[in-house]
Length: 437
Ligand code: UDX
Image 1 (cartoon, rainbow, N blue to C red):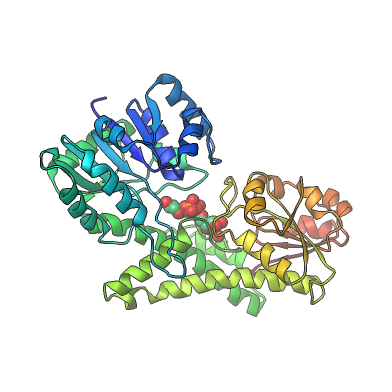
Image 2 (image 1 turned 180 degrees about the vertical axis):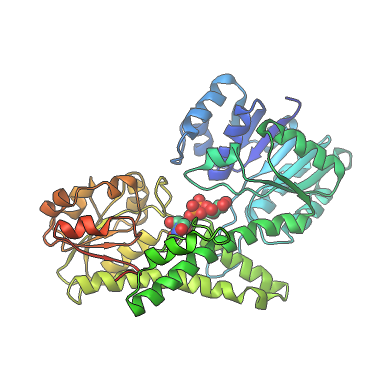
């Protein structure tokens, strides 16, 4: 492989990108300022749960193609292409994204660059960031370095990160020169035939914001229909199914329930609105306020439904919560609807016990005020109400009889429309779901 790659930032995106590129045959150096994290990665320990990734990480380390460092000087000397995979979290108390980690990375790397190289941003950013960072790079890199910037947004989903990285739906690159395009085409050649969109910086940045805004809108659309269904005694599950047969609509991302959470969709639509506001285009995205509001209302509705089943108050009520992760197959609890609901019920006086197959440790650390069970059965023991909030397969497969023997009263709210209502009702459960009669 002609190019040596560095990957700066080792979160979900960076670790996956580094390990997958090494697996494709590149020599890769991963960099993070977190010394402990780098030590763990270098010894093959994955700090996140991501199916298939640990194996690829180990394979990379064993082959010698993948290494990790905390030194920007080393990274600059090593890499022909530097991928920026830093987080852009929501600013505290604001909608806008905090891009300071990206700025810091460019400021740390640029002065050490001493030969031709490409710096490639992959983070999700407010449009205009790439042009700003390109100017910063030009200002801080030594004149002889020939350092250029390109933008290459990443669309991977947690839980499918490896699959999405190695088999992407499309590759989008925003470039300022034909040379940068040529290099990135070569880098992604091992992925085979993948549709590639080559464009300018702002379009490439916007593709990512627009994709996430569309997905969030689709989820909130069906959840808005769920609200209308609740008011009219209709069934949103059947409604969604009927819509999905229309190819133009499609069934994916049309699952009604507790709505979206995680480290991306909620903060990305807010950052998108904030940026549009700065650009004087806020009117274009006011609908995203509704998308956000519909999404947050689902959490409140879930708490209301649980309270109703608890007899009007959570006082003296034991609530068994199944799920803490923001979605199944992930240990990520960032902006998790499940935990949000659990915490609110606890604040309203309920005795909440949570269980999650993988996110339990993260939940414990973030919310020591809640109780935790060692298994699903353990979490629902003696419960007056059970809430299914993350649709892990092992919860969908639960036996209503076995669970029924553990609880105080057979009442369940299915927050993800994941269970078979008839089976649960046949086993004597009072079954309720969001958006269904
Ligand atoms: C998302 C985008 O899908 C991905 O392309 C982008 O790169 C990062 O953000 P991710 O956050 O991993 O990925 O999760 P995703 O699978 O998109 O789910 C987001 C949330 O929406 C979850 O909380 C999920 O439970 C919820 N969801 C999803 C629904 O409520 N209904 C659906 O139909 C689909």
